[in-house]
Image (cartoon, rainbow, N blue to C red; front, side, top):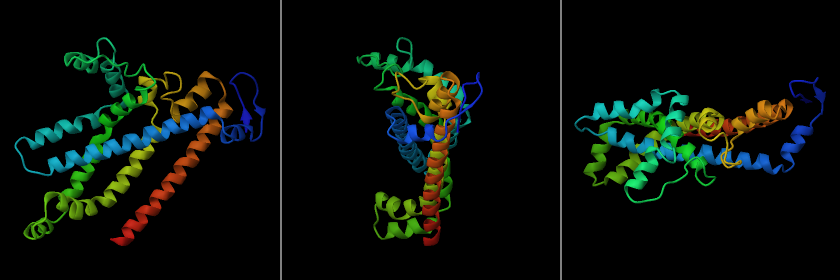
Length: 255
């Protein structure tokens, strides 16, 4: 492994960067914790929101196609446009969110200017952009479930919750595994949302690994360290993917 600052010739430093990263470097572990919180928090919220709307759209009601079209709109928007829109909506003085809070008599919140809210605020923007992926995937899977199963369960006196738990959820299990795997990879590697909204701040409160790699490579001119962090990211995602593939194989084997 070389150290290279973009100006002077590269210097061989051996495994020094990996030793630094893996030997308890507090800054790196804080960023890794932020990244895991950002990824898993976003996935859980997206999964629940997507499941809720899929269940709603699986029923017949007036204007369902219009509602479905409107709910799919976020998925069609570019990441950068979503990030810039949320940046405006989070504005402390003129933003929509603080305007609504003031309207009901509550105080304004520094959504992206506070270490308490910055990561969560970026998460909300990411969830809004991507929950339609879960929604449309679950809805397509629900349409494939035979009606005869629900009819037989209703004859036996099952409640709506029992229908969902014992029929819908088992049929959705393979879809949940695949969609969660894909979205986890996209979320873990996403750069745009965090970079545009908070740039990883305030301080390191919302710093995630992709932005951290960028900062080390292009702001701190430590290309070697950035490469080492990128390799650690790749190993983490590879391990995560292998675990998920194993779960998927087990699930397919049970079908």
